[in-house]
Image 1 (spheres, rainbow, N blue to C red):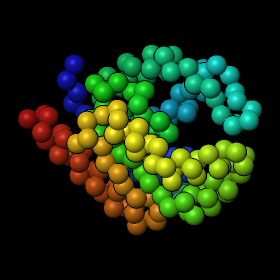
Image 2 (image 1 turned 180 degrees about the vertical axis):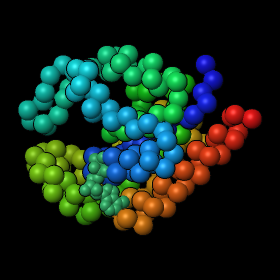
Image 3 (image 1 turned 120 degrees about the horizontal axis):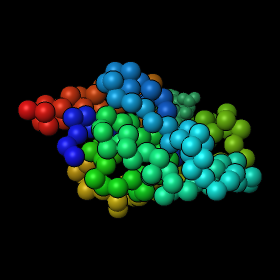
Length: 174
Ligand code: DAT
């Protein structure tokens, strides 16, 4: 089914700025911000709570089923710290947000992450795990890496994605 509005994945290590970017983008573009974390929680797409990591153990099949109908209609911004579970056919653009490790350390400390989770996320950011996951899962021309260290970065990024949405609509709704 052809979409009239694109679907965008905004991904990156926790603390990189996904939620903040998605909220700004949703406001500017009218696209819908889907917090995957909320869907996992609200629709119980999980196999319980991991005490050590303080996070849900996600049931990916259940999650994809819960999202499918809405995403296939288009116009969704998917906000999640993983991306390769989403079928290629769902996704028009993948934005991988990146941040300096000192800044990430400060943001995750402010969230009072357990030490093991904080360290693992810092390592993941330094090792570019999400960028690699995105590049492995999707065509390279739809994967974009953007810096998210400062408020200025965020403004530039949101402008850029908004312009991309406009262009996509022109190209696909002619
Ligand atoms: P995520 O959804 O990726 O976990 P977030 O949007 O909740 O991240 O952001 C985490 C914190 O960092 C939050 O207090 C907002 C701040 N932040 C995010 N991106 C930023 C940026 N580019 N400049 C300044 N602060 C930012």
